[in-house]
Figure (spheres, one colour):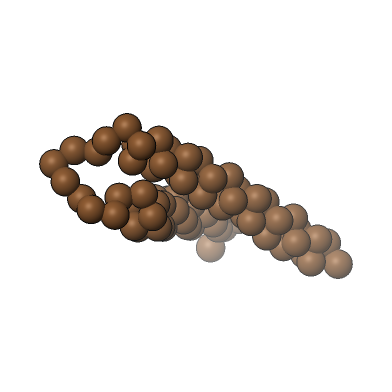
Length: 81
């Protein structure tokens, strides 16, 4: 396999992993935040439920980003050794 083909394949794998990670993030946000913010599901969300879902989603995404960035830094550091 040529170097260009190998690079192309690695990029495709990275994109697929990124998509899978994003799908997992959305799945976890939906599960965790809905359970926390909507104790009794109804026909529509009231304003407190909407606010709770927005805040929960924002915090979950921020946490995910912190953990992901720490993981990437650690992986890069270990690869540099």
